[in-house]
Image 1 (cartoon, rainbow, N blue to C red):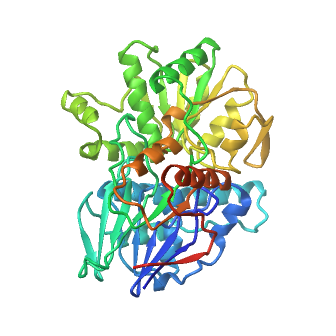
Image 2 (spheres, rainbow, N blue to C red):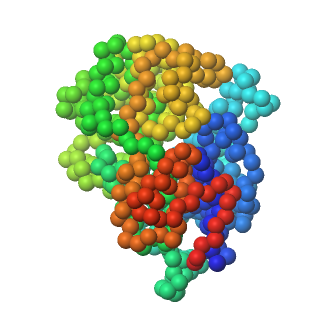
Length: 466
């Protein structure tokens, strides 16, 4: 007997949590934080639908907070089993969970100081101590390594989304080939031929597929070469005499930006400028990227062998302390600021946007998906103002958006990955996408392949023929 229950990322792109039960073993795949609008964020405070102590194991597809950020609270509330992910993911998860706890503490303190929270006092979802305690559960594995338990085999395969990202293959009933089934959780699938990362590994012999659908209704805009599009934005920002501010996920997008900016400098396509990375988490994550060069693409490895510091533009400045962060305000033009978070949900980027958005000579560049209800989506949609730290900030800066740096495959790239499957899954479940994206992706899959596709609701359970 097997069944799957969907406890997050249903008609939304955050809060990924999927419960698989096979012959009495309960496995949770991902344990993410809900982000975006208030209604979504409040769900993080709801009791988990299943007692955490009843879950035997946890498998993480990758390190991003929408896939990992609830885990410290989940662990505090009773989970005591092992948690598995790739080695690179584990190194990044350590950084992200500690940072998440720190940011929540800071945000609660700021809310209490300014009095804009309805809760008296405002409290963090979990503490730094909770985050540290949860890290003791991890037993990381290598790509392709077989993990055996309770007549199941688990493998992590490169998904090409961020460093360490994986789709998870779970093979059931290893003692009986006739009744054995393969269940695949895609996590987030990356894009082909992107800087730094390898393309997603091909999956085969899939019986049940749980598939992300973030860009299920969209194609990435053809902007030519992504590096040329970035060069245009940088040079136009310089011509207007302002500062370029880039909200970027600390893990993945920041390192890609640094890699491409360095290349553009070497090629003479942009002048050498001060590049500020103002995110302690991004700074630590970049060290992890250096450590796991072996998990990057061949080009990155060759350049490293040639002695290049592939993530270091000439005038790179890492800003770790608050004083270093505040000092950036002295630069009124000819500079690039890269700061987290990518969806402008918290962190130091809020202070930079509060300072730079009201000035028309500045530019704000988005390079990743902006979920519904986030400040990033509001800015991108052309709202005249945005609320930051309890105050409304007018938006006068130029707003740019480049989809070429997205870490998510669009629907054609997802279909191309599915095209490589050598058999038709019994059922495909769509998760991690807003409602319109999921409906569109389901239609694309049915049209091209004739597969059975289901869009599960929150809390919905399905029996699997296992």
